[in-house]
Image (tube, rainbow, N blue to C red; front, side, top):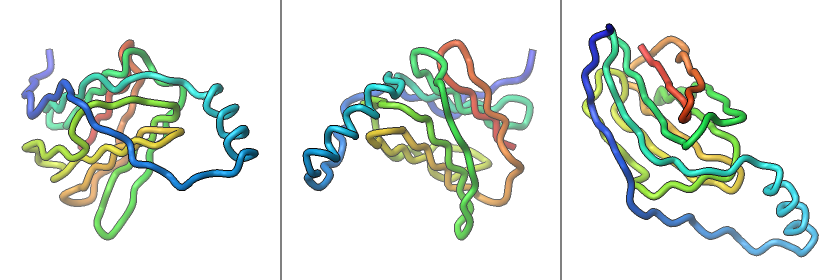
Amino acid sequence: MPRQKLFFSFNGTDVGNSTAPAKKDEEVKNTEEEKHSLQAGKLKSIYFKEVDGETRISLDLGGAPLSYTSFFLKDPNRLVVDIQGKWDYFGPTVLKPENPIFSKFRIGIYDEKIRMVMDLKGQTPAPVISKTENGLDINVK
C-alpha cells in the first residue's frame, strides 16, 4: 500500500457566482440551449494527499465528469484543469495547502465549466489525471 500523507481537505460552505453583463434575447436563448446539453453537478470536496512522492488532488464531484482539459501557463508557472459542465461549489475559492509542489490552489466557477488553477513552485511534468467513481484524481510530481 502506498504511503499517504493528508495535506489538506475541504468539505464546503457557500460561495456565490459573479454576475455577467446583460445579454440580448437571442444570445440568452442560444446560451440556455447549450447549458441544457452540459453535465451538471456539485464539487463536494477536495483532498490533497502525498502518495509516493507525488501530490494527489482528489475531487469529489458525485460522479466522473464527462469532459475535462488541462494545460500549463508560464510566468508564473501554473497548472490549469477545466471540468466542462454546470458545476456548483460552496467553498472557499482560494486554498493554501502545505504542499511541496504548489503554493496556491484557486477555484473559479463559470457558466460552462469549473476551473482549478494551481500556482506551481517550479516546473513540473504533465499531471496524470484519471476519472474515478466520484470525480477526478490529479497526480502531480
